[in-house]
Amino acid sequence: MRPENYQAKNHPPSNEYELNFGPNHPGIEGNYALQLKLHGDQIVHARADGGYLHRGFEKLMEGRLWIQNIALVPRICVPDPAPMELCYSLAIEEIGGLEVPERAQWIRVMQLELSRISAHLFTFGGHAATTGMYSNMYWGVADRDIILDLFEELTGGRVYSIYNIPGGVRRDLPEGYLERVSNTMDYIESRLPDYDNLFFTNQVFVNRAKGAGVMDQEQALDWGVTGPNLRATGLAFDVRRDDPYLVYDQLEFDIPTEAAGDAWARTLVRRRELIESIRIVRQVVKALPDIGGPIRCPIPNPLAWTVPAGEAYARVESSKGETCYYVVSDGGDMPYRVHVRGPSSMHAVQVLENLVKGCRIEDVAQIMFSLDACPPEVDR
Amino acid sequence: MSKSIVKWLDNIIADVEGVGYQRKSDRRIRMDVASDTLPTLLELLRGRASYVHLSAITCVDWIEDDEFELVYHLWSYENNTLVSAHTRVPRSPGVYLSVYDIYHPAAFFERDIHEMFGLYFEGSPDMERFILTEWDGPPPMRKDFDAEGWVQRKFNFQDYHPEWLKQLEDEGGGVAIRPEEVRAKKRADKP
Image (spheres, rainbow over the protein chains, first blue to last red):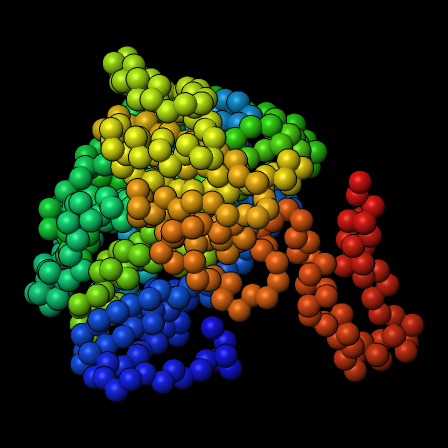
């Protein structure tokens, strides 16, 4: 809402007061706002207010060539852009019947898992900051930067890689790249005990996060919760295992779950996912040298490329949850319709509204970070 | 996925009249259903076939047919299959039934579709604007909405004529070809 359009409402006398939490608030994730109603410091009503990041991606995509949209989609989720590119590419490959070479699939898995690690490190940093522990944020951003260096070397872009294209990936690995990936994984793993001491077993964090924003499994399923937030309520579901794409069915990894369903459980699930992601990257590093062949299948001139008429629903497990793209083609050189289903469209709206009800004002930021809500995905 | 589940699903959808059933791959099923039987189908799929997760509702504007296509993507945590239920509703008057009482996540998607396509869902708990709070134009995701034309009419930045540009034009320079005019001409030439 524009400030000039704000009108104070006259309420009957009560002990409640309104508080606009965000969009410019250090405790809120991204440009997003919550309109809270408070009684003392307890929240009695919350209403999500989005739209501050709306850039009309879905409409823009209808006016751009299939290949041009690759540069557009990663911008939908800034901390974890790789699943966005991949999901869009998967949908086009399904409609167009493109066969992705095996080497490209393994490289994609590596990029996705690196992206997941970097996104989780970022989220831990933000979550720690909401409980007053800023050191963890500095560490998380610094360690994320080492992974961004790997992305820069591989793709040319640090944050938005624009690396997955329909049919494969843009570039092959540089010389000695796998060794550097392996070294980085060793480094990240060696840092985990430090993170444990600083954050995950820190009594400040444990006392604050335990019991904050609790939901049980039934509520989670009812509200459409996915990803680590669902696994924190005890349901071992992961798109990578249960609706496998790429070569995830050939990889070994566990699905960590927790039973408590509170902010602490959600963060712990992410912490344990880091180890699984490192495990997956190590398997890819081991397997990739033996997988030769091309890195993409030939596609016609991208500027005059038409995709046959059809529709596809592609699903990917991003660091936030279930990310889906529904792409419709009418046989033209541009998509007829692209619908982006970001996991945060559930987490940041109705789940957040429900979870903050009854909690205290200082826990709002923490609950939002523990849900790993990403406002650009809501606004699209 | 075992054959028994396929049979089981077939039995369930046999209860609903006029369901087009197509197995696209191992874990993708497409169903085409008339708009008045869709809520019944969803209720069956949720209540009797464990499709408890509504992944998304997509709206596609088929302007040539004068219809909106609504696609309900449902996932079953037990069968590990995704059902996409397609239905079509006329563009005008643009009213359809909410499935909020079957799937609670529908509230967000229906609100979003109402905002972007102008399709109203009867029975949805909240049809207030979410993203385009102060929007006064037509629903922007409709195919007949010309985004650039609307921007050109709405904002007067084409009148932007600062001193430095005036100086340049006095010296014989300036913008020779205005890109928005070129694009407008291209749009007008399009059949």
